[in-house]
Image 1: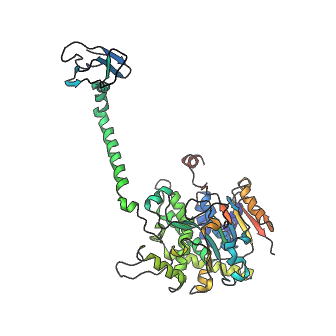
Image 2: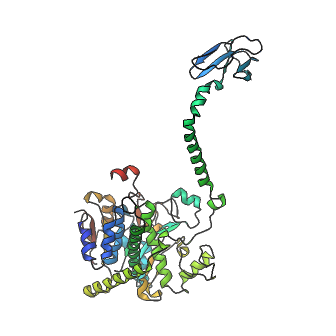
Image 3: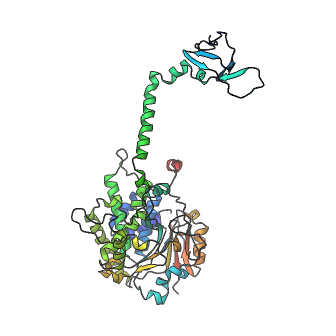
Length: 284
Length: 198
């Protein structure tokens, strides 16, 4: 029974888009399948996803940072939110030395061990699913082992194909392409970036106006963007980003605090159990 | 004079030409000397200096590390058949050192903020494929919403994914209990805690 229900969901309920099942069935590791499956579940059904090693500090509806969703007076300001994510990593000033010490591939990111979709079929989740499947196909087509014919999934690859990397990049890219250039998120991004991240073309001198991590750095309260703020209301679906201390406590970076801090709503045991050691890779 | 090996040299006091007592102790050879003795060892002259340390012994001990590096040992370490191994070792260490220092220190400790990360998967994405897939998903969404009706607002549900029944531990149970007004059902791979509509 282990995979049957997931198989039925992926291969029958979502059979109208066969690429989903093709990608899902191609994954050699459990972590890849659970990554894609969680996006598919809350994209199709909506709802709240949490990893098995997440435990509550408060009930979901009593979380202060989720007031924009659950408290009527505040929810009226952002009536259409399709996805709620939390900050997991927030260290844009980390040096290469620090990154190497922590074994980070990037300096910032949203988490995917807890996600909430108040509405079905979030365009943000759709883009995450599209990219996860596209990256899978890219890996299968171009990076197969010459002896086995199968792609090699390193830890970094897993993060980039189905993991938090693809979530973070998809969200920032969707915001960039759907919000007007006059939006506050774009303005804050360009103000902070000021020629650091190569947004100005050396050839043309044009500057790409987009949303970067800058507006989400050191969030103190939830930052919500309603669906109606996009140029096309259906293109983004609305997003709320929670500060790190809502769902991301217990880390030694990013301004994270302890599990019992008053802002904690969900706590995650950052075990990374899917990152197997060599012996486990051999014997399973 | 030979002691279980090649000649160590003329172990005689260079000045007095008197033979010196030689004691073999494990890997080290101790030569009983007096201060000021000159030893000729394989063409090298060593002046013995016992320093200021006093000893209850009437004799002076002078351990010659040089003795450890006997000719045989040296030849063994640098034998032609081992030179290739030495070459590989030195090259490996050299490459390791170079690879670790290729980044200038100033870059290694650079704390300039980076607010944009570009995954290598986005270096050359298949935009056509992604666009077509997105269109397919949107079509599917519209079909489902048309069939189900409603405005797309999700039911209050909590989703978790478990490998098997044993995979569901106390954390998952406490998550359920913290939201006790919800109904839930459990399946082995996918189980769903269904919120009852209030």
